[in-house]
Image 1 (cartoon, rainbow, N blue to C red):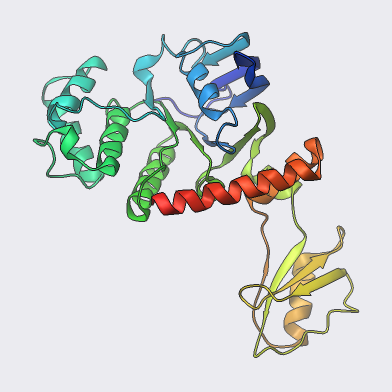
Image 2 (cartoon, helix red, strand yellow; image 1 turned 60 degrees about the vertical axis):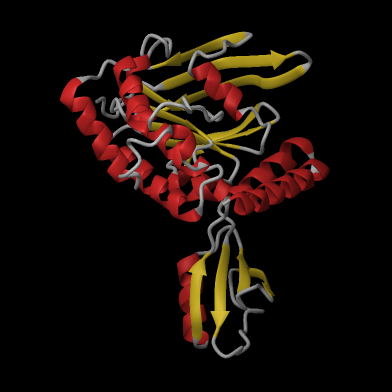
Length: 330
C-alpha cells in the first residue's frame, strides 16, 4: 500500500461536464493529497457524483483533464475501491458467492480471499449472512456488503459516494469507525456526502461544491483559521448575569441559546484565551469554550459571497431539508 507522498492521488484541471443544457461540473480544478481523508460536500445535485464518476473514468469530461494515481483510474483499477451512489448487487446470488466473484474480478483467490471475506463480514457485523441470498438482506445490510466488496482487495484509494445514506445511526457509527481505521493505515479516502456534519467529524480535508462550481478545497485546519468565528460560548451558573459590556476585546454578546449559553463575539485582534480567563475570574460559570464554525456555516457564507443573500438563504433551507430527510431515513 502506498504511503503519503508529495504527488497528489487525484488531480482535476479545469474540468467541465454537461448533460444537455445542464452544466453539472463547471471548470473545477483541485488536488487530493495522498493519504488524506477528503470529503466531497454539497447539497444534492451539486455535482459531487458527476465529479467522482469522472475520477473513476466511468464518464469523461467535456473539457479539462482528470488523473487518478498518476493516470487513468482504469489503469489503476486494482488499487482503487469504489462504492457507487447507485446501490447494486446480484440479488439472487448468495452473499459468499457474490463476494468470491468480486474478489476474483480483483485478482484475489484461494484461502486468502475466503479469509478476507470472513474477516470483513465479522468486522461489519454480518457474521451469519454468507449463505443468504443478497435479496434476503435489508437495504442497510446490502449496503454494508457493497462496502465490503469495495475494500476486499485492500485498495490504496477508497472512493465512497454517499456511503452513509440510509444507514441507521448504529451502522453509520460503525462505518465511520472503519473509515477512520483505513485512513489511519495510510489510505487515501474520498467520500461524498450531503450531510455536512458527518464530514466535519471525519475529514482532514474538505472540497465544497455548489451548482457544479468549486467553492473550497482546503484542509480542516485552514477552514478553522480562515473562518474563525471569534466567538466564545459561555454557560452561566444559576442564570447569574455576566458583566461583559466593558470587557476589553468583546464586540457584543447575545443570550438565549438552546442550552442557555451566551455567545460572546470578539474583536479580530482579541486573545480568546485571555478573555476566557477574565470571564472565569469575573464570576462562576458552568463552562466557557471557543465556538468552532460549522461546515454548514462556511458553505452558506461562501454561497453568500459568490451569489448573494437570496442564494445563501436557499442553500441554508436546502441543507436543513436534507438533514431532516436523512434523519428520517435513518
